[in-house]
Amino acid sequence: MEHKWIQVAIDGDADAFESMVADNYVGLYPNGALGRKQNWVNNIRSGRNKYEYVKLSNLKVYLNGNTAVVTGKYDEKAFIAGNERVSKGSYMSTWAKVNGSWKVVASAFTDDPVK
Image (cartoon, rainbow, N blue to C red; front, side, top):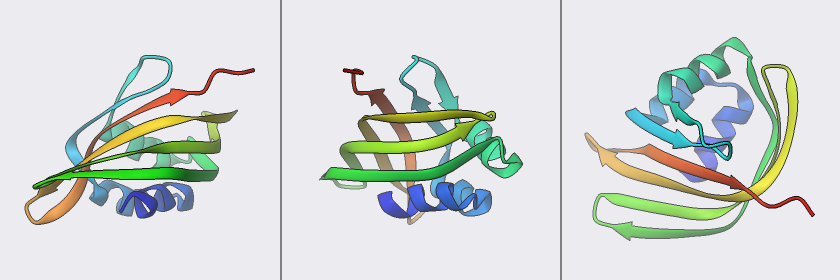
């Protein structure tokens, strides 16, 4: 599910992305800003957010009943509001089973320090 969630964002498939994200989703971004589901969906749908690539590695899944936490590393190149963003870092996604389907309910991203 983690790879699929990322792939639909890369593909610009806002409908598929929307179906995988819980309505009360909250994201924490490297700059400290909080994100919500509808903003992210709207940015994908409008073409404001475009992902050239997102590579995931070192994934680990921690399962506890109907909740799963995925940790790993990311490497991405995206165009956010027309501005190129290349970043690498660590992230964590929290998934929960909602009405029988797995949905991402939260995520947090941190950029690796630039050396």
